[in-house]
Length: 124
Image (cartoon, rainbow, N blue to C red; front, side):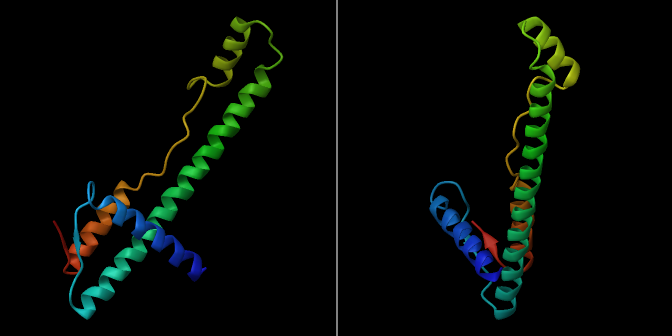
């Protein structure tokens, strides 16, 4: 479990490093030992938040696919397009398809930035 978390953290750090030149602010981590420990805790919280966002999106994708499968199964006997469309509308009033969501990391990043700042770090 720890090894997987370290690999995940390394991947995030590599992505952040790749993007830092054009999209991300430069992170100035706290210089003190206590600040460094605090910032490491912020990093761990961000990883957990990102994992939760990924899990939530994955679950929503599964629900979306299950809904599409249900509608397809219920409406497949209809031959005429008009009949099939009425069936789809009756079995899925929210629309013919749902879109697969992507993980929302925005709140994780905002919380992480606040946490790093509270530990004595800053962004430029």
